[in-house]
Image (cartoon, rainbow, N blue to C red):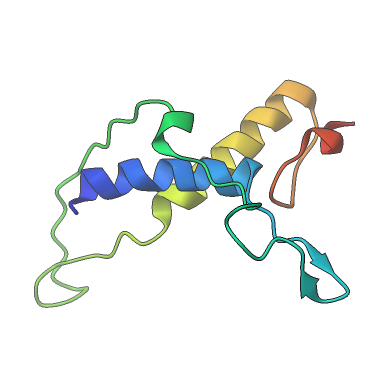
Length: 104
């Protein structure tokens, strides 16, 4: 998997964690402990994304100049959705997932 593919894959994951994924507990026991009841976004739920790579070698990080990408795309999507909703309705969301009930 290259950087562009990884960035494309983390978009739907960020969308899912911002709007869908939720761990439901009842007195410490999981209520949605299988994927049958756990909502997960797919690439069909996300818009088309173009990842632009900026070449930037940094030999201070390590001998090869490599850097990790990690969950960077996920965090950016969560933030973008929360900020878009703030600008649309004037309310800050500080917990994920964001639910329609939280708008009012």
